[in-house]
Image 1 (tube, helix red, strand yellow):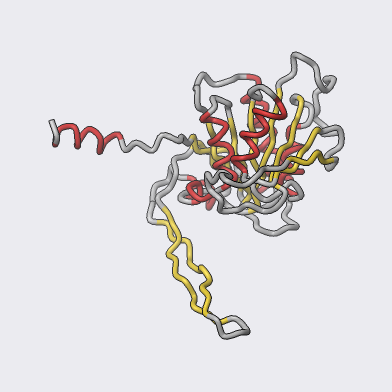
Image 2 (image 1 turned 90 degrees about the vertical axis):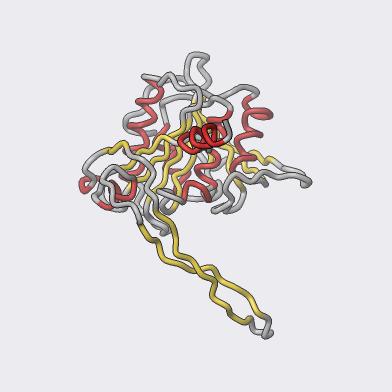
Length: 267
């Protein structure tokens, strides 16, 4: 039991329903850390992929059957593995397991960064955005450490702070979604939380051409991360300076300034 857990009986009609998912699979250490962060704050239900789904973005399964299997991986927490994508997990959870919208959806804790352009490719964030499309407040959490042995102490601490805040003082926003990244390192080294904008940064990519043992050609994606944004209000800046970055994100991709220019052009 989490040391700060609220003593509520699981299943109480007054307690919030907390849906937890991820893209690293239901067996990943990060999702276990997120379950522990949310313990005592409501009835937790976990629905997560049965295998890693990193980089799946907002993919959904069409033309293949989806399967759910009840699991017993987390003490006193109802959990299911899903054969589909992170977005499939959210859709199935709402329709077939919960039979209602949860009070909040948490995704993660991802092994690795989801700042800047990564939000476009991230299965972690796509699951959170899928919830927000359905007017379910959501948060995606990522830790800047790819190691399977990563220390999630700081990430768990800040995840709990943010979830508590969201549940106690809901924000009047119909499609609320937060992208939260936590720096690698000990809890004491983190300076606090910064509300940020998404930096313009991306990977300078190329494909290495290689040959397999049979002499057949194949390609391996490589690249380096390049930050083109020198602003001090971005997620990349905050993380570099040991702050937890919180970026409010949205699924509406309309370029509003360009829309206004086009309206004048075609008036």
